[in-house]
View (spheres, rainbow, N blue to C red):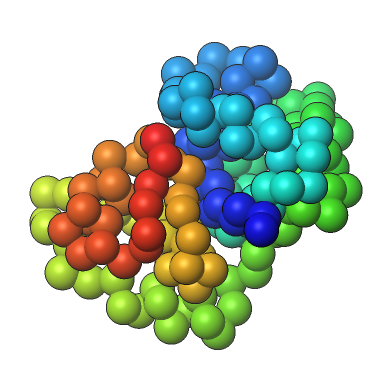
Length: 149
């Protein structure tokens, strides 16, 4: 049976840190190996909520050269893989998005983070992230099976 993981922005940035010059985000070796395996086999499915690319573009598109490099070396590599999906913000994700509440005020996270967590809830699968706010929320609410950091 194939394993499915939702990948958040910090995981994507960490995996492609050689392309996204200057990134200081890191995820575990296990998480890197899972993402890497998905690029070389079809035994692992990766789901990228569309907001991941919105965040990536917002943070890393500084010049036309950056845009072209990211498009070619990240976006198209993911887009062309049959075992990777860029998930839209659809009805099911919205329904789970609305369920994310009772977040502790000092640990509040933004709508991008909520959409990523809602995608993992919709898929009922693990999330690859190093975002401590999401990790803390899931420890309290147990809305997804587990998180790999």
